[in-house]
Length: 293
Image (cartoon, rainbow, N blue to C red; front, side, top):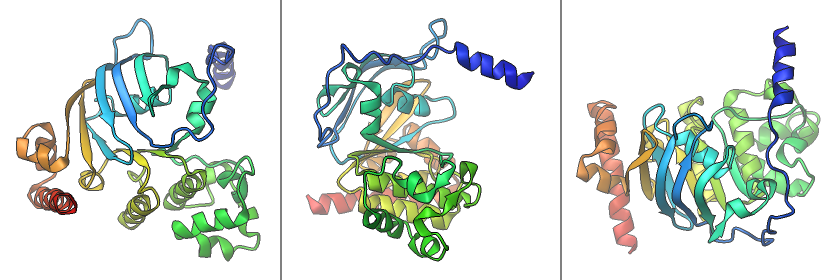
């Protein structure tokens, strides 16, 4: 009966607005730069509940790497929900100067890549998981697998790209599933990549591989990273500190550490040894950027 009640509940859920008659058509190569602007953005999950995001105003420049941090309930995941318009938003989000609320949901979402905390794989072949719509060649798929160091593993199987993926990817480890999602993002070649605590459940070695691959393969992309481990975002161009649905701090990590605000407090709570390591890493990145200028 529980299953029946769940099915009935799903049938009563209101569908997303799929009326595209009044929507504009996106340019074919949009977004080309990858700039993102949030302007007076509010979000709530129900009309009778308070806003979980309140008056967000910030800009992400093209190719910037932004780390998003905050305690549980700060609004980090809600920020991503707003970007993908998973619930109606109040205010505006501009990507490459286009207000995404004026364009069809499916088109906007298809131009943004996301690697969630729980990797999503479907029953079927590995090829279909990497390229669901058969838009890319085998060479591109093998190249993406090589980038995430899975090429040898897959090529050693009898069916290679036609290897069957069990429901939820249960015949792969958590780390391998996350790497397959990363390979899928590489194949898509979108200019905006979102990581929603993507390395929270993987071992340090896989975490390091994911971070290295992102730095190399997505160097020309805008990357938003919700952080579970502070060391994964300490070398970001900027860190966005969320608290209770509002922005508390937004600047280079080394600058935030010098100000000794919320981000400084979060780093100090990691312990003396770890905090010293994070301080050194932020300072090293800051010096490197100054030298490059």
